[in-house]
Structures are given as structure tokens and as C-alpha cells.
Image (cartoon, rainbow, N blue to C red; front, side, top):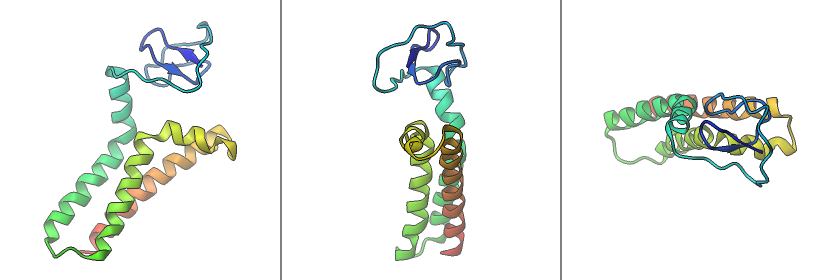
Length: 132
């Protein structure tokens, strides 16, 4: 783990900070068990870049559910569950990627996390239109 001199976050990276893209090559290691985030413009911009697709799918699903205005149906739980998964995978993507690295390589776990985020967002939109 290294502490970024620009955004002050402790990240699990060797060369470059994933939040502000500052070089970490010459920074000393920090003894920490987990990453520590600081609420600043770099972190907020990172969250916007990571979650824009899930938020867009959430808006489409909510507008679609408002548009149909039917009684609450048990099948409406599918788009709600899928959009929740998409939001969780977009906001907690770095932690989920680290958790599944016991089984997969770093690159594949990042791909898998992003693929699940996108697929669950698409499924939420599809189910919101099919169920209506």
C-alpha cells in the first residue's frame, strides 16, 4: 500500500494512483491492511466515472416503473434487484475486485466485476420494459 501525495488516499497500487493518476513509484510503502479513501474531488470524480452507467440504468428503470403505474406486481422485484446489484458493483468495484482475486487474476477480476455491473444494469432495463 502507498499513500498518494496528491489526493492523500492509501491505495493498493505500485505505479499510479487509480483516483488522481499521480505517480506512486517513488513513494514509500505504508503499513495498512486496507485502502483508505478521502472524500475529495478526485474520489467523487472517480465514483462518477465508475457509476454513470448504473445511475443511467437506475433513472431509466425508475421512469419506466413510474410510467406503467400498475399495481405492485411480484415480477417488478427483478428490475429492482438487478439495478441494486449494478449499483453495488459500480460503487464497490475496487473492493469486490480485490475479494475475488483469491480465485482470478487481477485483470480478469476487474473485467468480471465490470461485466457484471453492465449486464445487471442492462437486465434491469430489459426487465423493466418486459414486465410493464
